[in-house]
Length: 359
Ligand SMILES: [Zn+2]
Image (tube, rainbow, N blue to C red; front, side):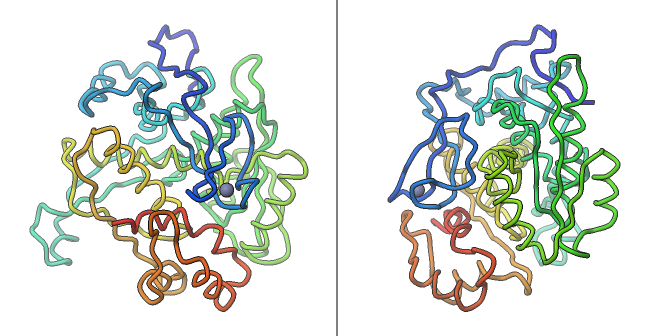
C-alpha cells in the first residue's frame, strides 16, 4: 500500500539542497534555527513552537501555480499521485526517496448550493473541501505523510501520538505502510489515550493496522503531557500537531482549494478551529505563496471555534490579542491561560495560529 518515491519509476527528481530548508522558532523575537534532522517539538531556547522555513532562493519553485497541473499526466509516480507531494516544491524538506505516501490528498473541492442558501449567499459562491476522502478518512493524512517522511529521515523506529480519534488512525495507517518493501525499516505505532476518551471506530482502525494502544488515567491533556515526556525520554517520534512537519503537509489542502478554483484566490477561507493546526498551516500556505509571488493577495481566514473550545475566539475577540508582527500580548495570554485553561498549555500553542489574525 505504501508508495515510496525513488522505487524504480525513473521519475524526475525534485530534491532540493539540504541547506535550503531548516526548522525555526515561530517567535520572531527568538528566531532560533535548527537542522532538519533534529527531532524537536518546541524551541530549545524559548519553548515556543517551531516552523519549517525555506530559503526560497535555493529552492526550485515553479513560476506559476498552473505548472503543478502537469503532474496529473504522470500520476504513476507516487510523488505526482499524492495530493500532498504533487506540490513538493512548496514543502521540499525531504529527499524524494524518503517520502512515504499512501495516496493521501486525492480530495475534492465542490460547490455546495444548500450551504450557500443557508448562509444567504449566491448559489455558486460557497465550496466545501472534502478531506474525508483521505485514505484513513480524515484530513490528518495530509500532515501524517509529512511527519512520517521526516521520521524516516531521522531513522525513527517508533512513532507516537496522544489522540481521541483521527490522528491515531492516520498514524497507524502510515506506520503499517512502513512494513512493506525488503530492507524497509519498520516504524511501530504507539497510541496514548485517556480513559474512555476515544472514538471506538477510530480505535478499531488503529488496532486493525497493528498499532499498540496505551490507556492512561486522565483526559486528552494528560495523555498529551505523558506522550511528550515519554517521547523525549525514549527517543520516540511524536506526530501530534506540535510536530512542525505536520503543518507542511496540511498546507497543501489550501493548494488544492486554489487548484479547484482554477488558481483564483477566494475572498474567505472558513475553517473549524480545534487545536488550530490547520488555521496555522493555512495561513502559512498563503503567506508563502504571496512571498513567492504565486498569488497576488491573501484571502481572509475565518476560524470558527466550538462553544466548549473557544480559547482562540475569546483571546482575539474579547481580550483583543493579535499576532502584532510576532509580538502578541503574552501577559494577556498568560493571565487568560492561568484563569481558564491551567492544564492545556494554551500559551505554547497560541502564537502559531495567531498569525492567521495578521490581517
Ligand atoms: Zn525560540
